[in-house]
Image (cartoon, rainbow over all chains, first blue to last red; front, side):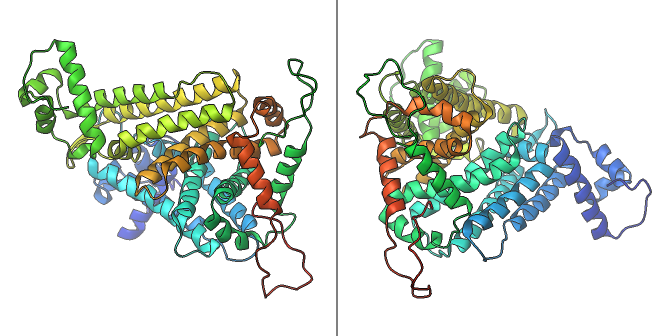
Length: 260
Length: 260
């Protein structure tokens, strides 16, 4: 995003440019490693001019975070058409796109890491502002899922399943960023399956959840992610033991699969 | 823990007493609402004497947090005897005991909330120390689970399942604390089922995970939590639709259950 050449911009245009440049730098490395000098250089302006628009690195970081939060929340929007599993998978792809683009900055933020250089203090207002932004993204995700499920007044158990799955998606993304040892496409579909599995666990023990969820899943196609998971789990449960265990009594029946 | 009467204590005994009193207060209310005066009163000593042992509220908070982290980590220890599902359920009960005892303090901490009064600044060293303590508890939980599974060199997919389930347990506990709208006993068993479900999802799509997990689950009894879940999920999948949907073609077959 370096221009190399100074050019006159309007006040708002310059602010927006600085936020974009800062977000780009804060995303590529841990934010505490990014200096105002670097931001100035990348924007093609002088350090004092940066301070003309933002009182310090912290306020620029907060502005960049706000833009990132709006960007991420917008990616949760998905047309209410077609099977639920396929919709959720498309959202997961866009979520991992975001995580991929903002890797180091996303990790630093979600691990509660430093937004200002080591040794400095962080005012409590910054901690609150940061937490409020993270919560706003989680809330946007929660409300999108509820809307897709067609539920306006969710019971406590449904709220728990959705909100705890959102935190599962966050931790899965963070673990993926730490070494990228599993292909991201696999994790995108795994999170869709995890949603189905956590929902099914809740429905298996609660009639209210069962009544709520059954109609939602009736339109899932046989080749969709939910059906695929169910087929594989049934196969897993039906699978015989791969080899007898010598320490066992021979007359003992083979046990059911991993979920049994 | 108020004694009301001053009594002479040794230096270490007094430090330990103050940490205990502070932990009790920091647990019952959000830590930013607890004052040094209150801690002094509860310990039955003067405010200056508190400062003789701890330079300020922050250092007392860190000491209390360290004790809580050690306490929680110790609760993960469980004899390597009997079925895995029952072991995990006992650990979940002790985990919810801890969450119950330290509710407001646990919420404030895990939500990245204030440990010092609003308006004050938090030195970065405190943020790092707090994050390191939280990570040490997560790591203890992770290592305990690996040990129970008998795995010393976990593949990336197993590490992901365990670590992301730990974050699911944290968010489930936090959501429970926010209103306690679901009985905690239900959530303790639900988290055991969630572990089985997330593991099964991973095993359904990965041969390595399947080979690793099958022997672990062979010794689960028919009346254990894993078997109970499997039976209920199979029943759920086999259940016919509760009522026909009028907008559908009448010749259409009933669809499988929520997981299908």
